[in-house]
Every structure is written in structure tokens, then in C-alpha cells.
Image 1 (cartoon, helix red, strand yellow):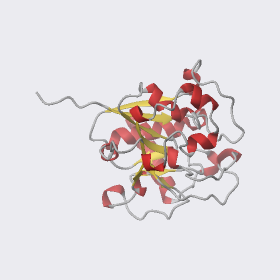
Image 2 (spheres, one colour):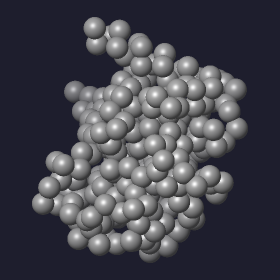
Image 3 (tube, rainbow, N blue to C red):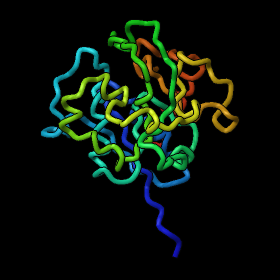
Length: 237
């Protein structure tokens, strides 16, 4: 008999204001994958008794900190993918999964993003700090992320968490290609589909077309998101 194929564990940061984005992202993952997926939205209310920190004024989403509970949710075993909900998958997520490397505790796209704006979607504060957006898409080697206990996630500062101070050093962070976390309207607009070398994962970090005020965010990429949404709705019907 062939060896069983284990589903790829994917955790998605969930914010109730971005339910539409979450649903479209999940559908886009399923539509393009070549392997089984096990997808879990991280809903803060479902972590009562585990996640207890007060909302930070600089926290722009409900999952700003809960993302760091993924290793705990995995029992500190194996690998897992975390991604923000404001994304759209255009390629096979199994290709990302196959890049995991045991030399690293975390792998991510290492942007050099210094935001020029002070606010982003829905008037939320835009914060600038080193490693901005690195934690929005992570391959996590959970056995090497044991510092991320619930107590630590509840008490550490946002900068300590998002700048990976819980690791021994930056040598534990592996680099992924930019196409796995393309920042819409931050990086140059892609001119190709994923199959032709364009981004495999689009990320509307400044806010996306699911918000009434940002229907055209990303130009042609906004139209692509609406097309993916409409296709998902058609399939649901």
C-alpha cells in the first residue's frame, strides 16, 4: 500500500469583519491544491481560557497575537502553515509546504516593508517596525517553537512576538520567495498569473475589496478577488 498522505495543516487568522475574505481564501486554497488540506480558522472566542490578553490599541486585527498559538494548537509537533485571512491563493499551496526545512524554526517571506501611511483599513493604526509582515505567512516548525506558550503569547509585547524575539536568533528564520506573500499595492503590481511566474499568494495588507470603501484596492487584482468570490458563490449554490 502507498504511504498515507497527511493533510497539510493550515491555520488562518480570523477577524469577524473579514469573514468574506476568509471564505474566499479557503475556497482558493482548495481550488488549487494537489494535496489534502486541514484548514482551521483561529477564532479568538474559541480560545477562551487560553488567550486572555487585553486588546492592544495598535492591534489592527483579532488575530494579531493568536497566530502565535499555532505551535501550541499543534501540540508542538510537526509543521504547520499560518496565514492572514486577507489573502488569495493563486497557486498550489503544496509547493509552499514542500519548502519546509528542518534547519529552521520558522520560514517566511522577508519583506523590507516600511509603510508610508499611518492608517490602513477601517481607520486602523498602521505600525512600522522591523520584520513588518513577516509573520503574516509562516511555515512553523512547531517542535522548535516551544517558547510560544499561552503564557508567553498572553504577556509578551507585540514587537517581541512579531520580531521573533522568541527565537534564539535570526539564523532560525528561513527565507521564502516573494511570490508566497505578495503585498498588494505595496509591491509592484504583478504582470503574470501564478502559472507564468506571478505571485502564488496575494496579500491585501492595507485592506481589500471585501470592504465597501476599498472595492478597487489592487486594481486588476481586486477584479480577480471578485471573480474568485463569484466562482465560490456559484459553486456553493
